[in-house]
Amino acid sequence: PIVALVLAGGTGTRLYPASRADQPKQFQSFGGDRSLLTRAVERVSFADETYVLTREAFADAVHDHAPEAAVLTEPAPKDTGPALVYAAHRIREQVGDCVLLAVPSDHVVGDGFEAVGRRAAHTAVETEGLVTVGVEPTRPEPGYGYVEPGESREGYETVRQFHEKPDRETATEYVDRGCYWNAGMFAWTPEALLSAARASPLSDLVDALERDEPERGFDAVDPVSVDYAVLERAEGVFVVPADFAWDDLGAWDALARHLPADDDGNAVLGDAVTVDAADNVVATDGHVSLVGVSDLVVASYGDRTLVVPADESQRVREVVARLRDED
Ligand code: GDD
Ligand code: MG
Image (cartoon, rainbow, N blue to C red; front, side, top):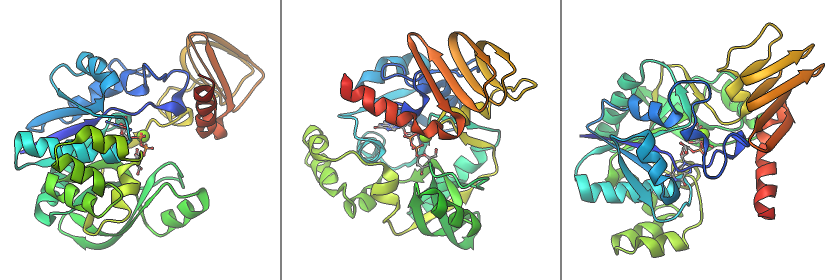
């Protein structure tokens, strides 16, 4: 069987202040009629079973947004590496033989996902490897992983090397060299992931899970994404190219690509007045007015307001880090 695993434990810091610690982006709709999480769960409805993998604090919210899915909570929030290893271990116990299809919940995905998801699952069984879904890049985005393909096979390609989040210059090289973006969607059998994790910084965690000591394993493990911990160093990685529209709603500039723009190129979510203002991103649950400014992100939610040049919107992370320190 295909078991879908929807990842929903992230905190979405770069979409502050819409995304807050208690209400991160996957639970928000950003102008659509259903939340990102609800849409992610619907997208994998062809799977035989669906689990949402999240941190304990979000379990109730996940139930509300995805009542049909089973909720699996990892013992501690340590990023996607430990979370996915934990899920592989638990689902192998609960379901037995299966192939896992892990998908994020912070994406906008067009039609055609099912065929690619099925092909990725099939490839994972056939190769007994780790399968990622590759998207044709349209810009040198430093916020993504890059998949360098090797040989072409029937329906998939071998992977020469996986590179997580390069700097912009290196990303430009990868794009020129014909790398794919890693769509953050993975297929593997529980055995394949666990055996790759045994040869990674997550090996102690695998041991702890096998000794039935998940809490102790999670206490000891450093937070790390599955991309850095496993995929960058694994042998036997394969890529299935995607042909659907795809975008990660990572930061405010990404959201702007999905909002209707007014005649002056302002992307507006919520109630705003713009006078002589162009190419701004405005998002608010209140009311925002802009006069005579351009290329800004202005986001205002509750009692929090953020203003940042649109091309520096990744730097919101720095604000959130500072706010956390002051807590
Ligand atoms: N359960 C759980 N626990 N889920 C988590 C955790 C965690 O600790 N941390 C993040 N997630 C979830 C997020 O909610 C999101 O749905 C997904 O895992 C991916 O996490 P992100 O934090 O959004 O990763 P990213 O966007 O920086 O990078 C990943 O995705 C890119 C494409 O969107 C990488 O896989 C990149 O290589 C990839 O290009
Ligand atoms: Mg993301």
